[in-house]
Every structure is written in C-alpha cells, then in structure tokens.
Length: 386
Image 1: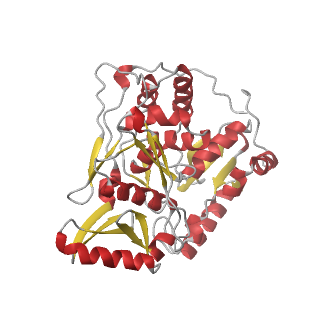
Image 2 (image 1 turned 120 degrees about the horizontal axis):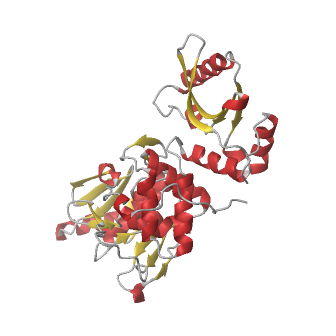
Image 3 (image 1 turned 90 degrees about the vertical axis):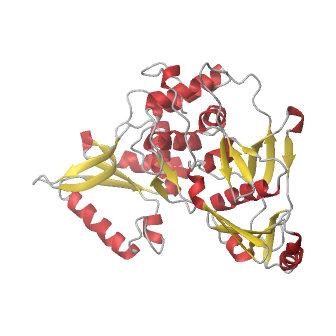
C-alpha cells in the first residue's frame, strides 16, 4: 500500500511558483478552405465542416450525405471525420480532435480544464478519458452530456462534462489566472486553463498512476506527440516550482497529496512506462533505483544509459514498452530490425562488465505480483523505509 506520508525537503513557497506555461497544441493544428469546406487538421485527424458562407450550403448537405452512407462520422453537429481516419486513430487524437470540434460548434469559446487541459499541454495520462472536461459558464450550467455512437464508428463519441470553477479557489497575491487562448482556424477559438490552476485542481483527483506520470513529465519537460510518442517540448520545472503549486490546492488533503507527488517526482523518468515502473517498485517495497545511470567499460568508453540501476548488486532494470521494436519505425525513425540488433549488442557489451539485467513490460506493471517476482529473483533488496 502506497503511503502519502512524508514532508517536503523544502516547504512550498509562493515565490517558487512557476510562470505561465504555453501548450504545444498550437503546433499541431492546421487549417485550409476549399470549395466551401474548411479542413482543420488537429493531431493528425482532419475535421471537415462547411464554412459560414451561404454559398457553402450545398457542401454542407454533401457532408451530411456522406455521413449517412457511413463514409464519414459526425463527431459534433456539423463537424465530420473520415471513417477510416477516425477508426484507426489513437485515443489521444480522438479526445483532442473532439475537443476542437466542440470549440468549432460552440457559441462561446469553451474553456477546457482537468484531464482535457492536461492533454492539450501534452502531458501523459495512464488512460485517456472518454469524456471532455470543460468549465461551466456558471454554477447552474454544470452537467454531463453523452453522445450516441454512430454505426460506422469503432469507438464511442466523447461525452462532455461541464465543471464549475472550484468554489473558494485559493486566491494568492500576485497569481493571475492566465488561461491560454488557442486560435483554431482563424475564426474559432478555445481556452485552455492555466496549467498551474489545472495541476492544482487535477493532480490530487487523479489515480497515482497518472498523477506520477504527470509529475515526472513536469520535471523532465517531456511532452506527448499525437501518436503517443515523446519528445522534449517544454521547459522543465524544478521540484520547488512543482511543490509551490500545492499552495493553490483547495484542501489540506489535496495539498498533502500534491506535495508528496512533487517529492516523489523524478526528471530521470524518460517515458510514462518508466514513471509507472518507479511507482510500482515503490509500492512493492523495493529499494529505489537510480535512473538513467551511465555505464562505462573498463576503457572508460560510454556503453549507454540504464533505465534503472541498483549499484549495490550491479543489476540493471529495463522497461520494454515494445514500441521501439514493434512499430515500423522506432521512436527515432530508425528501422525496427536495426533497433533490435543495436539493443542486443548494447546489452551484450554491458553484460560483459558483470552487470545483470532484469526486464519487464506493461503486462508486468498491470500485474504487480509478476514484477515483484522478477525483482526478487534478480536480488533487488527491499527498502529499509516502508
């Protein structure tokens, strides 16, 4: 059982609160118009809808007829996606494209919050939610709206949850809420909640799996691409900056969890899988490893970095997400067969230095008992602090 007890190395201080952060979303949206139909490509998914020009009325009917034939899917009133593109897309793509479609059809620019806002900022989540989260224009406008799944779609259309601004949200001197305006297509806009407020409201609500992934990403600067890949796109926060956001939490319980997350976070986690691995190792009571340890040969040459390293027993832990092996191209775009051969040779060279490996995959993280068995067989010691 994971405990959230513990104290921060440095108590959270208001002066450590980070500045406003910008979303990388603006780089993933393109828009064009042809024959009265505007195409806004959002995270790889082209959204098609008729322009406001009265002459585009015929094109609007064409879009609806194609949807009736199952060639396109209406994800929001008047906004359509090609069936094959929608059905083959990633959950993150569908979520964010649906949020953009909501903005296109809304009378007032919606303000996205909680998990949807985190996705706009490129932050990883263990599971992409099946509902879009946005702020209600008033407390009486809060609520939930579901949407029927079209026959041509393999996936449910995303529901919408409207959430009131938290009552009594801590107003800190000098902290101005700066929601980010996002221009979609030259006419429609949406708002993404200030990341600092979003983290304060959302991280304490998340399960630990997602919360640790987000906290690690804030320290590393890693952000997700639309297809689930990772690249550094944001300035990393310091631990003190992340901890300072706890001062914006609405309750002591939320603030304690946030402070624990800031203390537990590690910038060395290079993927959501490594973040979840860290958490599982902690939950299972094993000694915390060093992350991204550089290995050198007897001649001093670098042999590479290890995901996890237990120096006392000279054991390396490696999380295999398999994306680098199973995709047509790896994370770096290199042929997967070449990646496999390079990884095999790297492992052999490190083993020649007397280092043993223990490897695990997503399945082991989903069934912690399997990971515990592997770590115990490798001789990983138990933590002295439980």
